[in-house]
Length: 273
Image (cartoon, rainbow, N blue to C red; front, side):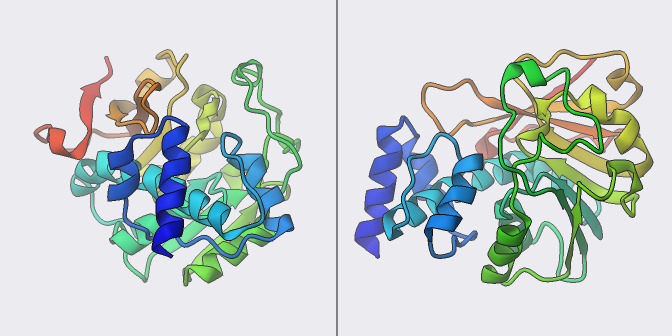
């Protein structure tokens, strides 16, 4: 097992990843056995990894998944400390549950929290920049590339309970059973598709103290619609040496309490004007 862990780290290092990020990440999300069917599903989302149906690839995906979740958790820990522990959570585009497993096991929410996951099974990705300002309109869910059956398998493998999956092909976003205390979307809404496009759908899901977090596209620009909310940008230490730092937007109807910046968490808070 140790040799496989080392091999997976070396493969990721060959792709330009930071060694410290890979080795320090807690292995909280556990990848299930890799079959050909599983690899096919994972490849649609993890497009930058070369994966096969073997144990080495399983460990490779697990290491990258946990490293990504660790960097997001480290950046958002000060934000979580500024809000009440969420009792109702919505993740938009959960993929195969890495964030749900990681955040749940880190205690971002407790076992009694209601976790809602919004995604759809799809056969292709629409990650190109041309889709950013023109995502398909519901009920067209061709922008989703998940696999709901495999998502359930991953959650079961990680002993995650008390969740509800909402099929985006059947339910528009605004009709989910909100409002939610915490809404987050990593590399989906806000990253592949403009957040402005979804604000009308998201607004009914936000109460006065709800917090939403999303990964921002590198071409993101502040809009007048977004200025109606309190917003803050957090830079996240990226996994790859050649990449610009990823940015997360924190959004709420009302400001979170002020806090001191803690550089040891890898986050630099920048209020948006």
